[in-house]
Every structure is written in C-alpha cells, then in structure tokens.
Amino acid sequence: MSLDKKGNPWALIPFAVFLILFIGSGIVTGDFYKFPVLVAIVIAGAVALAMNRKVSFNEKVEIFTKGAGDSNIMLMVVIFLLAGAFSEVAKGMGAVDSTVNLALTIVPQNLLMVGVFIIACFISLAMGTSMGTIVALAPIGVGISEQTDISLALSMAAVIGGAMFGDNLSFISDTTIAAVRTQGTKMKDKFKVNFLIVLPAAIITCVILGVLTMGEQANIKQLTYNWLEILPYLGVLITALAGVNVFLVLAFGIVFAGTIGLVDGSYHLMDLIQKTSEGMAGMYEISFLAILIAGMVEVIKHNGGIDFLLYKLTRNIKSKKAAEFSIAGLVGLTDLSTANNTISIIITGPLAKDIAEKYEIDPRKTASLLDVFSCCVQGLIPYGAQLLVAAGVASISPMSILPYSYYPLLIGVCGVIAILIGFPSLSLTNTKEKKPEIVYEKVE
Image (cartoon, rainbow, N blue to C red):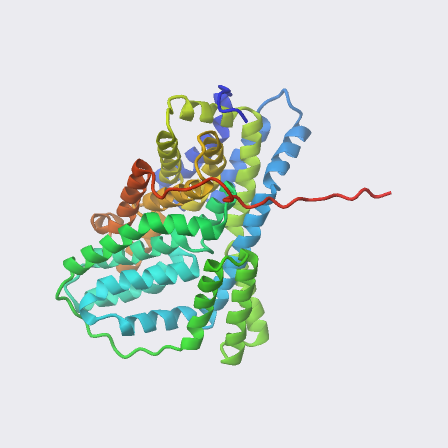
C-alpha cells in the first residue's frame, strides 16, 4: 500500500455507518452500550460489501473473509480466548480475593488511597482486565470512603487509574494483545517500552494521592488470604517477562490455577472445565469484533478508503515525531468515538503500521503509543465502561470522578513527552516477530 495514493473517500462510508449507529444510539438512549456493538459492525460490514459495483459480490466476500481470516487476527482471537479462560479460572479459585486481602493487610493505614491504586495496578496487570479489577476493588474503595473523609469520587478514580495501568501493560490484556499483533512485535518488548513511558505517571499519581489523603485512616479488619492462590498470577507475570511464548504462558496459567483449585477443593473437575468455558465465552464478543472489523477493513482497503485516510493523515507530516503524533491522535479520536480502547486499536492498528513503516518508527514504540493513548482517553471519557461501572458501584456521577482522574491524564502527558524527546531510544533491528510460514503440500 502506498501512502502517496489519494484513495477513495467514499469507501469510508462503512466506518461512518458504524460510528453513527454506535454513537448515535448512545446519544439518543443515554447509554453508549445499549446498541449491541456486534450488530453495529455487522451492519457496517454489510454496507461495505454492498459498495463498489465494479467488483462482484462473490469477490467482495472473498476479500472480506481474507481479511477476517488473517493469521494475525486468528492468533489474536486464540490469545483472547486463552486469556479469558485464565482470568476466570484464577478468579474462581480465589486468586483475586487473596491478592486483594494480602495487599490490604500490607498497606499502611495512613496511605490507603495509594495502596488502593497500587493494588489495582497489580490486580489489573495479573488479570489483564480493567473491568474485572474495578468490579473487585470498587466496593473496597467505597468502604474506605465511608470510614474516612476521602471522597467517593477520589476513591473511584484511584481504582480506575490502577485498573488502566494493567489494561495498558498486562501481557493478557486485550488492548496489549491487539497492539502487539497489529504491529508485529513481541509482548515482552512492547511491555518494556510501554513501562518506561508510563512509570513516571504511576509514581506521580502515588505522590498526588498520598498528599491529598494525608492523615486519613480507616480500620481495616483482619483479612484472610492464601499465598498458594496468589501463585498463578505471579507465575504468569514471571514467565511472560522471561519471554516465554504467550500461548505457553496462558496454558501454564490455566493448568497451574486449575491444579491449585482442584487440590484445595475450590474446584471439582467439571467445575474447572465449566469455568474455563465461561472464561472463553466472556471473550466471544471481542473475538468476533476483531474478526468482523478486520474483514470490513480489508474491503474498505480494497476500495481505496485506507489509502485516502493515509494520504490525508500523512500529507503534512514532515518528521518522525509528527508521524508518532498522528498515530496517537488517530487512536485517541477513535477511542473517543467508540468508547472502547480495544476496538480503537483494532481499527487503527493497520493504519498505524503503514505510517510507522514509512517513517521508520520502531514497532515497539508504535504498539506502545496505540495502547497508551487509547487507555488515556478510555480512562477519561465519562461514557466509557470503566467510569460508568465505578460510578454505578459508588452511586455517584461519572463526571464527578473526572477531576481526580490523575493517572489516565498523566499517561497521556508522558506519552506526549516521550514523542517530543524521542524516548526511549530504539533500534529497528530484531524487533519484529517472525510471521509463521504456512506451507501447502501438493496432493497428488
């Protein structure tokens, strides 16, 4: 694909249909999750297939299925399913409760909000889901606020901030998986670059929370935890950081957590199998979204829509920094429109990859920018799932949480600074994952 082709703006109509259905229904109903996103993308995909009469319908279907069945998309889907299974199996055998209770036991009573933020960081890093982290920790945040003068909004913001930390960095987060697969880099390499960019934001957030809640204390009752139940999370983090293949990491995590659950009586064999199935089922929507979006994007690409976007986005770019800002802006605006950071990365990932290749941006940096800026916006939009869930638990307005949303804002600031100063300094050599070769044997 050439970034110099002017392309065809009309080919982008399916994107517009998707956004109108998704955003329009949210504005009309007041609930951005009322209209099923899968239905929206199916309708948009149908519009894409109906366009360009110069190409036969059968050929367009072939183009759609080729994009939907791309090896990177299929790998992403399998990883989604395994990540969902691990998260559910670990949660079912008590890993979340034990981890939270251990952390609350360790945290100093006069630094509870800092502790809640750090606990949320670790839980989300281990679970790979911001939503699961918020559901687990938001009630604890509410309880702390009820025993102190700490506002509910600040408490929920601390939980959301920590949840977005792991959403951005976890090896089994759907945003990380999408960013890594679309840019063709390695999870371990992306983690290292991303971590360097957002670490200052986490530290500054801890300092701010500590200063704002100085002197506030709550009596946390004696909590019980089991070190054995925490080991699956530690095992997954350690093996992932060691560079073990993500499939093996997740398979190990499922078996490890399942074995502990069987030994301590948390599971019977059929219960374990059922939990594994439930975890995979929880990832069906995002998996089908990835497949359908990839198919639609392939048709739009064939019709010249992607060429048009790239031409418009890059015609005034004169430097590598400007290219990085265009990628950050593109994924941020997409997340603002879709209120879903994973969808925004899946949609903009192929565009970002083309821009990165033209301007020689390291894929580790591109994947990090996609993840950082999508999570930044996702943590700041009051109609996003994270703020809505936390606000629902605390019975407050999502808008009241925004003034305390320090971490999502700070990762955006750190991302901008990283672009401006060229941090971290990277070499393009040996950064991409080798795409698996598929060999077809001739059958006589």
